[in-house]
Length: 141
Image (cartoon, rainbow, N blue to C red; front, side, top):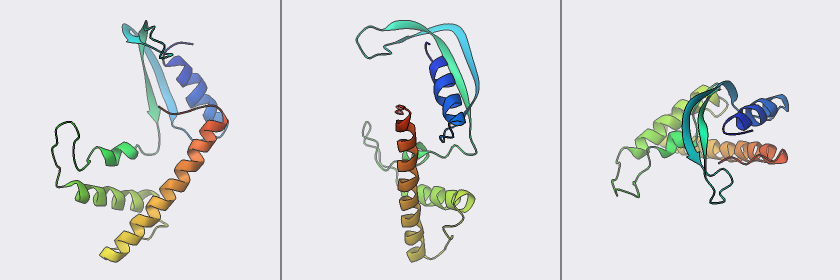
């Protein structure tokens, strides 16, 4: 299988039916346009038809949702002074919507404790997720 057909069938669909957490694939569309890819990283790139997979999930809050507002851009050196406020807002919003058992608090000391609980929960959940993926031979990225 070439391109995105393999991830569509083997990763998204198969892992769902194996009860391994993953986003669901909503559709898989292939165009006549091509892209050059070195699939095996062997120095032998090939032309392959472009494919787009739409994914379905309850939320698309991801690690990148926080990283996009990083404090300093390594390429440009630009500092974003609003980074801490954005992270606090994202964390608070995420916790109240998806992890309601981590009690929302307004006091700064409680906010630190809440963020620490969030980080611990995030680490545990991510470890379980990655280990489930690796049990079937999948490695993201």
